[in-house]
Length: 125
View (cartoon, rainbow, N blue to C red):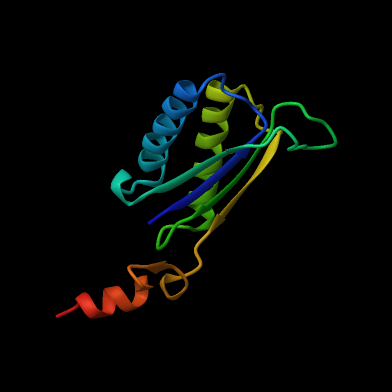
């Protein structure tokens, strides 16, 4: 169920280039977070007004919500991998953004008119 929102001031040139990047990012996130891509929701937002450290140089803001595997050690691994990805794919240096890794708990993620916690409880025999 990872919910991922990437905001960047890097314009990708065309709608096709943007779609290709989003699909590549989705696959990369699935590999990095070690969860099936079919469970991911990815939102990439282009914002030309995004600043970091007082400039409009290429930058990102990233928020990842992921149940059950967000911890201090994974945050370090994910940050490194994602920083390298953004440098390679968007030209954003690792010192040009912040990443937030959150696990709100299954009671606080809604799906199918309920919560993940309630759906898991109902699925147990």
